[in-house]
Length: 134
Length: 301
Ligand code: SF4
Ligand code: SF4
Image (cartoon, rainbow over all chains, first blue to last red; front, side, top):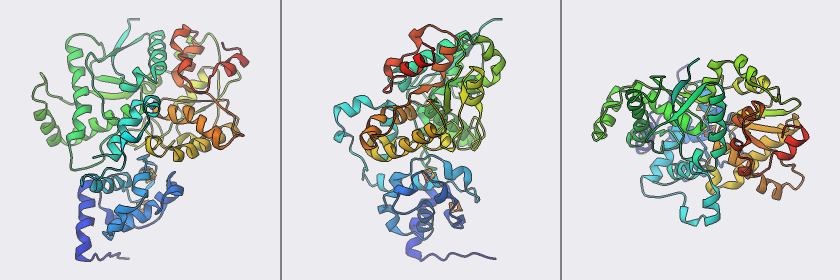
């Protein structure tokens, strides 16, 4: 059976951008839902990981405004399980990067109290800055 | 037998909140005739492997560290001429994945080497990044068992792996779904490894910085399932997992008053304890949930 996803030309752009930043061919996702079933963060997300893939395929700008892209913790559980060999963690990173590269930070480190800053291990602070700031 | 000297990358957190991880691991290695020789000059690896395909900038920091091993070989600081040992799971993952990426993409490596033109050497892909658990596997459980003077009898421990040691597959040190490296070591120490599907579930990682309640929920799930399965303690090799599973017990307790605190160890601390090494390397003062009451109950300290 041939599967075909037609993109409206104006949406092609976002889809292409996601593919080029992530290096993943998001149109290969066949929506099996394995990622959503495996994701430890899915319960907290507003859209689940397979919906993130679908919206990326369709180039829907709304995906950039979801909480889910910031809740993906790059745990790679979906990556080892995707039957299509797709790396959803890279897609989520691409979506975050599209926002961050427009100088829209997701986190303001200055809002942390001195006590919090002193208590957190460096790897936590550095990785959060890497993921949430541009 | 002459001592093996092997390059060792500590990373930032092993000098601060996870000092007890470094101290106990170095002492354990020494007991096994291995000297972990710290890189004379190292920098932060960036902690997370950069997942974008179009930006090489973030791969420079890890490559710069790999480059240092060559100098160490030249200066005869190490006897193992091609490996670098890492303890922190996050650093391990970032360094190992970057190494793989530049191995698979010679053009990227060329660009990175060109960028680092002030360095004396180019990075020539001569380094294998390994985790301390890889090294212990190579040494074998027999030798570990021989060193045990104080068996951890009756101690039920959940070996927690989290993400960075196991995934993705190409850098995982063990089977991503059924790991057993820590189990084998714990059994060799005389402890009883406990099984739970939660040993591979993410603790929430860096979300602890700006969304700590997501982490509190996940940590509560991981810890309470461990307790239900009979665990009296957990082991880890990640200072961020340790923070989320140990320090966040404060917030767990506030939200779930019925929660019973449970100590979280670095696996090397339990090895040091069983090997009867000097208690200066334990560093229990850095724990939120103090392990001494459990260890006293088991007559281990
Ligand atoms: S597991 Fe892979 S193929 Fe299945 S929905 Fe997720 S990304 Fe798509
Ligand atoms: S990598 Fe992200 S999307 Fe995939 S399972 Fe982990 S948290 Fe969920």
